[in-house]
Length: 555
Image 1 (spheres, rainbow, N blue to C red):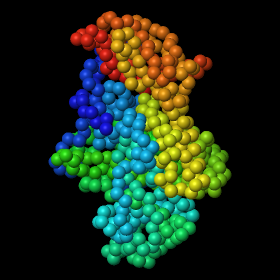
Image 2 (image 1 turned 45 degrees about the vertical axis):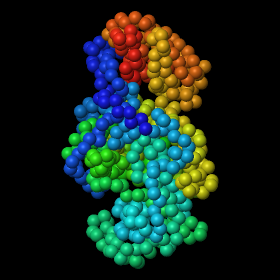
Image 3 (image 1 turned 90 degrees about the vertical axis):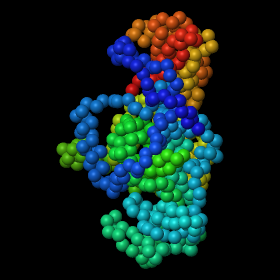
Image 4 (image 1 turned 30 degrees about the vertical axis):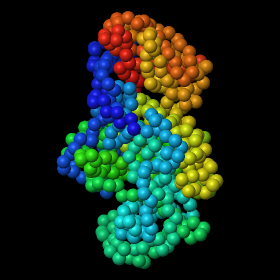
């Protein structure tokens, strides 16, 4: 699966000192194989340092919303490029992410299947109460001795939370992230048995016995189907030695494979676009897991996203997808105005209540009214706030890769009532299209560049046209070719020739030995050209022709 290790380092380029017309230095790419593998799975003989981030909810809120933001602003950090990208502006395969659907489209059935997992064998023995989270649940062991987290849904809302787990796992697995997998279960009372030694943590602090009375009380507050069975999501325990969460800032101590600060990983930055698509409330370090695993005789850390139960509008209040937990600016405005300032979500209460009434298994999950620019998770995430336009473009590519047929195949697995399932399928398509238009179309959607046989033209796929977001007859390209030293050697205005177009490179002679083909697309004749994509070419003396060595975009 796209794990063609080329042995090349990520984004290897040599600065040549030339200056582009926009005042920035021209970047020269080396002529070497493109790195499709990060090689971050080298043997680590001893487990790296574990942490307890999942117990530091309030601390993370204060650090990420106040301290980290103050540091970022005062340091004049600006928009820094991601570091886990290769010469074609893609994210190589790693222990964090390994591309699936957007580079090798999966079948609808493969997307619907999600991460490989084994369904638990009944009955289930309850060994521990679930710690944290908004929903009831237990740690259980199945009849085969396998451990699972069992999560229930809220009373009166069939499929809520459990269905969200399924959709979230399907999407993130198909995109290329590591997730544990999930199985939906409809359990009879006899399928759950309490272990006499079961415990729970009172207020997540004091360990106490989980009594039969408390166990039955918890079951009385979970959602039941009309036939009395209990709807639950069973999530398998991640194998290996659990090291706690991965932070969205810095690296894990004593892990030599963890070389790129997490806030500078595109795979983490652009995950925000997927979270926006699914309206995931809490995509923070709290809902991640690192595991020290053994594979092929080596030991290393693998990184997982977990817990999608708060997706698809399952937030319990209208402010929870429109406001951070700590909002300094809005709070000050409300204070100064003596309460007359209205926060944006305050005008959505009626709409929110109606959404819950119309689609109780989804909650507030707007379709046509979805606005990515106003969506907020419940906390600021250090990686997300550093997302650049290039990162967002890549995230939009992930979302755009999900076809109507794949979405239609995903939804039935969530086990929602028919009316809610129909709405969810439509809302996912509509929200996908809104995100693609917001983050992909402003950039020249240049992909898969290659030279023609005669070496006189470079061809590329326009992803906006290929995915159906632009009609080729209305798309034009402003093309400018430079020599890598700041000199323009050719310029033209070219029309799109379907989803794949070829443009001149300004002659086949060697010249300086370097060419940069800058392409700006204009989808509407009245619109200004979007941000540029630049295809880098380098002369190969033994072939007597140029070759594609890089692709970059504006930040």
